[in-house]
Image 1: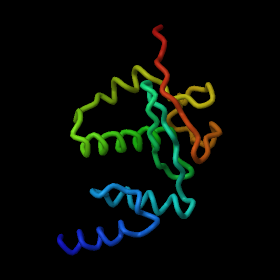
Image 2 (image 1 turned 60 degrees about the horizontal axis):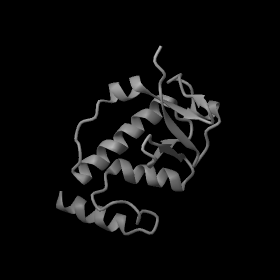
Image 3 (image 1 turned 90 degrees about the horizontal axis):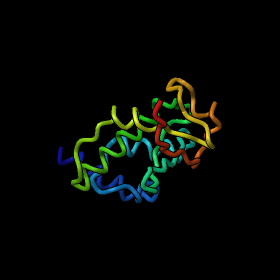
Image 4 (image 1 turned 180 degrees about the vertical axis):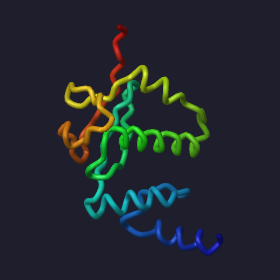
Amino acid sequence: LELFQEALARLVQDPLLCDLPPQVTAEEIGSQVALEYGQAMTVRVCKADGETVPVVVVQNASVLELKKALRRHIQLRQARQGGVQHLSWKYIWRTYHLTYAGEKLADDRKKLREYGIRNRDEVSFIKKLRK
């Protein structure tokens, strides 16, 4: 384990990975490398409070994969900051839509490309209207 930690510390010193946090996970390193090789893209998710969260997904990701990546990103950030540990994602997806250019990302199986989402594009949370 100590050997792994030393190798990880050296790896994070690499110029391509220097913007990663000190307690980096293997998944974060993989995502960063995929970004550098053009195999992944960053989608900026604008929360209702105005905060923008950069989420890394593969180039041909579906809406469901974006939602899962957003969930992992938020949970990891909360664990590092010591904030609220539990969010009800079931409540969040029942209460909010993700939208891009005014269009709801309603079909979880549909690819982000089919909605026209590219690298560094911004999607937003919009509160669902009651029926």
